[in-house]
Length: 274
Length: 279
Image 1 (spheres, helix red, strand yellow):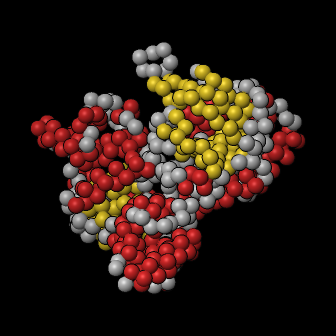
Image 2 (cartoon, chains in turn red, blue):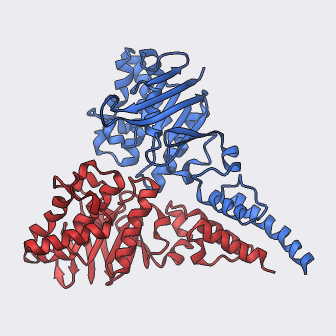
């Protein structure tokens, strides 16, 4: 449903951000994107959302070319994007007003706006904060509010650019849980992060390097690919431990590496069976 | 001489309806040359605590002393370098050089002395000399964080206090800052950091201060923190704790992949023997 064909983009100072990038995102996928700073992840996010146009090649969003200005309103309805710092994304005086801004701009009727705002509040668990100023929310709630602002436009595809990197771990987990729930309801998700632990359940992971896709595959195969280490990434510790144990004949199935609890459970199963 | 907090309490918005207690009855001692991690959940009072060290906040009750000095005194401020989470928030000069030189000049050191300190500081954080003429705001997140670190180091502090210094950096930037901090510590400066990133920091921490709802829940060595089963824990240690909770005779002080491998293989061999005996 989103297709990048030989997309290239360089910043005004000449730094190339994307080079001849080809990528297809299917409906309902959860795609994780990782890469060093400057590898082109955020540029990719902007291209996928139609906020930035390619200098060469084309980005097709459900058959619409992002270079065609007449298609922009339709693209805006279809793809939403959430960034790292929630504070830079607020426009309204209250959470509710903030959420209404998007659908209002898309010329939804007042009835529809009401419905969209209520749904977005429910999906992010922000009902009780609806009359608060978004600036008084905590980091995690603020990020939920930014997400709700995008959800209120009822997009089918959501792009997240390091949305948990400034949050404490507990808030990060709860934001990611909301995103996973949206995925289960059928939304297409592109999730950019530095935290590999967050991508255990992704359908597919893309590793970016110098504006290109270096590796691509299921988390299971990406995490066991040694070239990930040469690119400077540390594997999640439990996955690294499972990989090392494998060479000593102790096999921990992939699903069990998701949490310390499931990992320990599996070790007990293996060692205590009589 | 250490940083000492005795019976310190602190509240926000004192004497208003919004008054909130942030810290209660804190007794703490941090020696020179220690690597200290301040852990705890959001809202536990971690950042508030760091702001007491250099006199940004004054305690409501109790005393804070930095090498015997009042932390808001000029002499004490020279001893403590602070680096905050968002490096960009603390940069304000036109060039990296001016940024790092600001502290020493402000404390009245000569231009020559300042220059020497700037070069010493950039070496400590491995910034290249060619970066000195750059606009700090054109730098990447990791580089900005290093400039903020260098600015703090230019005063040759005895205590370096950091609040989430590697948040938002990419894996390479993270490792780089961790290495730098370890080097700084090796040279005798105490490094005190608030962090949620246990995977990165745990191997470096010598002492842990755990805050819970404004009080100290634990203070001591990393080893005793692990043995006593406090949380939060890095993933491997957390898994070891889970094994222990399921009745396996496990060494709770294990927190690295290498040690965990050894420990699991040891468990396998002893449990294997038990199973055979049972049969």
